Length: 125
Image (cartoon, rainbow, N blue to C red; front, side, top):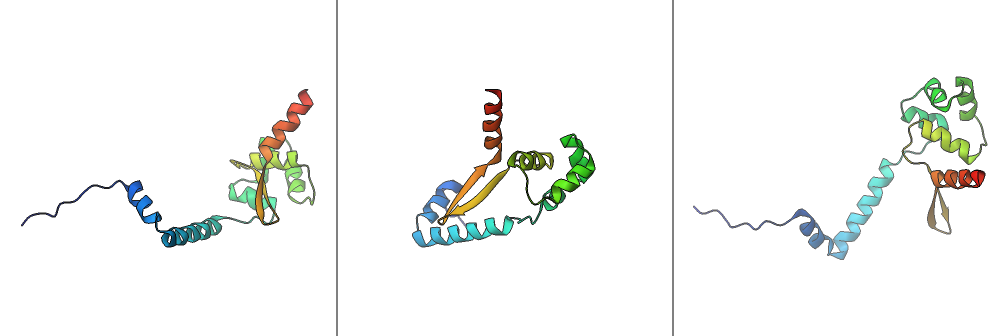
């Protein structure tokens, strides 16, 4: 009994061939978007972000160089500077901090780290 001859096809080449089908590519795009949405966590407040980072208020306070009460007040504020928000998020272990808004149906991301660099550059100038 002879084995059928098989030709090795690289995975990416196989995927590229499959995705050349517009219907299949559209189905994959819809599934990918749905998966991204399911992975997204919508935080209702800063404490949820801290808890996602598995940190206590005291641990965040130590990273910020402030007392635990300051962190408690930050988490309960209705308003704060973006630089304060960025510092808090960084202290909680956020790998990137941005704000996403939708303007006329277009999603725009504001990178808080870049904003912080710009303001610190102005201060040193």
